[in-house]
Length: 191
Image (cartoon, rainbow, N blue to C red; front, side, top):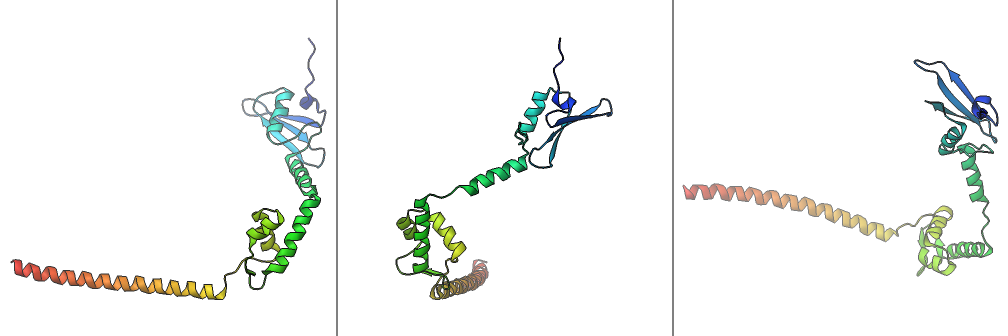
């Protein structure tokens, strides 16, 4: 019977294995070298495994095999693919139109739209999503701000609510005192 080649034990195909004496039994560690960076992945083995099972363990840890690509390089490659996606001409026209509408109908200093304009209308006019318009506006032009008169009204409402709570607490304390007095007088008359 011919002995199968164990790529990790034989140190081929950017794979290698180290076996060290341990307490009770030797321990083994499998290594895999990334083909794109100097990173070398390691996997401690509790039992001797065939190379296919070791490969499967590295795959489960996020590695790509043949060519060997570590999880870090794989995520960088995915980011580059996502970033290199070129928008369509229609998308570019919609973005240009959104920019123009925001420039004409949003005051970044005051943080308000001109009358009858908002993110939803710009999204409807350009065909872009409201989320895209909001994100772009907040990043490039600024966030929405409440007008000064709205802020003043909110402040007045908060002050009146606080006054109401304080007055109510005062009234409840006075009512409790009067009830105590009534209880004391009623107790005298009942006796």
